[in-house]
Every structure is written in C-alpha cells, then in structure tokens.
Length: 273
Image 1 (cartoon, rainbow, N blue to C red):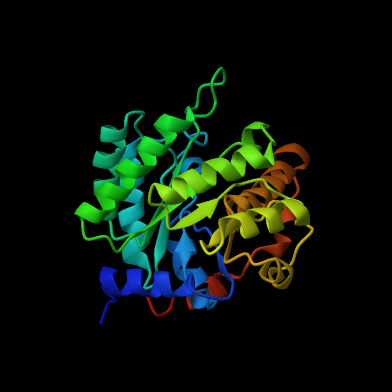
Image 2: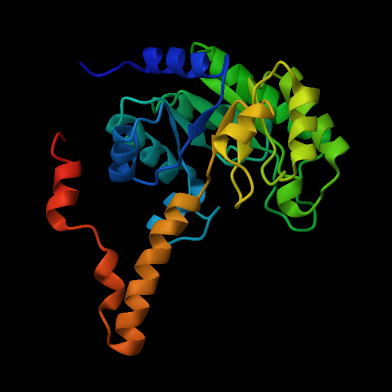
C-alpha cells in the first residue's frame, strides 16, 4: 500500500529530531527510485538537475513545469521529498504564498524558499521583504494543514557575499518567520559550519556538499542535521555521458562506454517497478 503524504511528512520531521542524514537529489523518477533502493531515508529535488534534463539552464524553468516534476518525484517513491522551490517563483509575498500552496499539493514533505532575486544588481531580497516572503510561505503551509517542513535558505555565500554574521542574522530572521530548517549553501569551512549550527540551535541545519573535505560522520560531529548534494549527482551522470559522447564525436572511439552498466543490470534495478 502506498505511503500517504501525511506519513511521509511525519517521517521527514522525525529525521530532523536527531542525528544526521543525507538527502540526495534525484532529477527524475528513475533516479528517485534507484536512490530509494539504496536505503536513503529522504530525497530532495534539484532545480539544476531537472532544468538540465529539460534542456534549460538552472533557474530557467517555469513554476508549472516544476510543480509537474515534483508530482512525478513524489509519486515515484515512498520516501519524503523536499522540494527545491527556488525563490517561490514570485517576487511578492502573496505570489510566493499562492505558489507554495500549489507546491504542498504535489505531495512534498518539505520545501525550501531562498532569498535570491536573480537580479545581478541586487542579488538578495532586502531583509524585510525576504522575511515577509518567508512568513507568507509559512502561512501558506499552515493553511494547507501545516505538516510540510519549510526550509529557509540564505544564498549570500553563493553570490559571493561571504559575511557570516549577516548570513546568520538572515537565517535567524527566517526561523523567527516560521522556517523549520535553515540552509546557507556554500558555507564550506569547519568554522563556518560550526558557527551556523551553534547560532541557530536548536533549529536543524542543512549543509550542501560542495567538494571534497568532509565525510558524513565529520559533518554529523559538527552538529549538521542533514546533508544535500544539489546538482552534483546529476553533474556526475552528465559528466560520464559527455565524456563518452565526445570520444565518439572527436576521436571516433567508443572506449568511453566501457564503464556503461549492462542492460540486464539496469533492467534488474527496476525489476520491481
């Protein structure tokens, strides 16, 4: 019997109560099913991975397409799915609220709202508006039942504004506006991560894996509650595809496909579906 959205939400919240878990990012139904089969406890969508799979750059896919994608992911797995919902696909709080309500209806167990504007001249929403947008997302979730977790994202380090004190201040404000979990992609050093965890306690903190340097155990020791990989799994898959295809196109060689998984093995992975 399929697991209900309510059950998924309850399981997702429980994962955030203690310990540390990895939240890998599938970009389609197949990758979601395979990750579930590997024993992960929850999944998260990836805006970049999905965008590339449709032939678009990251942040260039419309809300309707993203919502349809989230429905597919949630239907493909019994695991809770956290939606990378970018900036809510609207600038004003009312627009964010309306889109968050639609996102909740896809069956997600969590969703993130970021403070990036997409405007290079003013890359972050002014603090007051950013908080109002977060509060609007919280109200929208509550209006639909309140089970879905809200993740507040501060994108400052991703856009090159590496003032940790200012980043923490924004995350605290997002928590006060109703965010259940906090996330500052691109914080990388042990000191940065430890500071964010300490300043935001007891709220759970998400860390983005962004290159060699930490194991799951090491991040857990720093108090990180959950770890996501963003588009890294998608980039890994695309990297193998591009390497093999370029060898065919540029050298007339099929050597790059030597690492391909046998057809029977792939079919076996999906044998129960």
